[in-house]
Amino acid sequence: MGYKKNDLNLMNEELENLKYRMGLPTLQS
Image 1 (cartoon, rainbow, N blue to C red):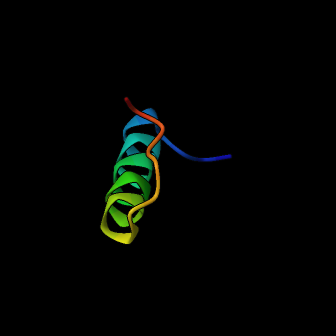
Image 2 (cartoon, one colour; image 1 turned 90 degrees about the vertical axis):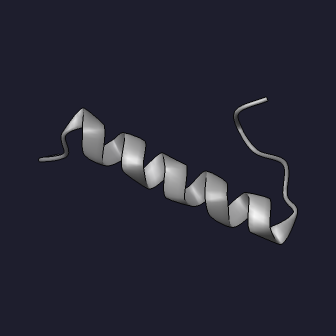
């Protein structure tokens, strides 16, 4: 649990980018 909020935001952005590339719906609409 040593994550900073910025690190989590970066991870979320990476996941969203992967989902977008794979054509899956993203969490942000």
